[in-house]
Length: 363
Image 1 (tube, one colour):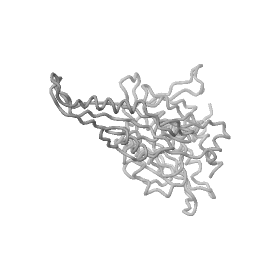
Image 2 (image 1 turned 135 degrees about the vertical axis):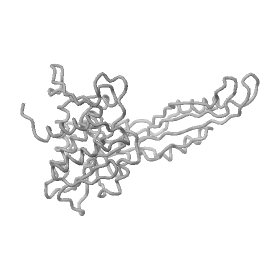
Image 3 (image 1 turned 90 degrees about the vertical axis):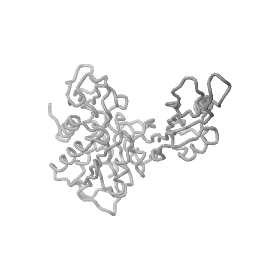
Image 4 (image 1 turned 180 degrees about the horizontal axis):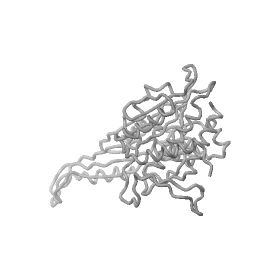
């Protein structure tokens, strides 16, 4: 079987990344690997913490800049793995393999190693080209899985001004033209402690239940054309009580809210405060909904390749990039964070070709 060099190099790089543990906040060794990859190809790179980036050879400050970004951190492997999560095993293609090349196993292979190495291969393809309409920046970043502040957000001021971005996440190379943002609320209902055997106190659990019921049933009136309705989920609840016979004075609960492009975090927060009794504290207001217009040349280039548009319910580093963002990449989001994670090798080959063909229509 004849292989093309960019594909071969991408697979080899991904195998090295898989073999090197890179849990969020512990990505220094994989950052070293990415740096070495560029060094071997005489491509100057810069690094801050565990983030590595490069610009195209003929970078021109007078031109707009497109950012290619994906992450090299991973979640921790779950206990249901039957394979070594750090062993980049290639399983040969079987008759039922729709991709035809076999698949590569390992933690981070699908989320988002396949995307990262495909974007790196794409950057290398354009690196030495002159007279591009856009500058191209590649950034391999950290802490995406925990939405950490030492990832893409920490280097934005060091990068050239970004006018447009492609964020590599597994989308089957379809076009996520919008993605929901995230707003996490810590809520606390306050009552008054008392003895459970007597008619004493005000039960904070009952107060919390009233508010939780509101979260369960309330529908924000505006619905996003691409992302659908706002989704609110109460995901945990607790009191500080250790004794069974004490009416709790405080009941805390957490709300996970998936935000669309038709409301700001501030608008959602104000609506909630108007409807519930509990104290509400947002953990962060950073992870905003992202969007790129359907008629954007980057999107239209993908549509001409037969790609489908959709709105993504999951959050990525797209939320932190202050420019129109297209989320697109090889692999399947359904495989992310699963035991015995894998990516079809054909998907990596397809990912490189897709990125290049889309960018050729723009840069």
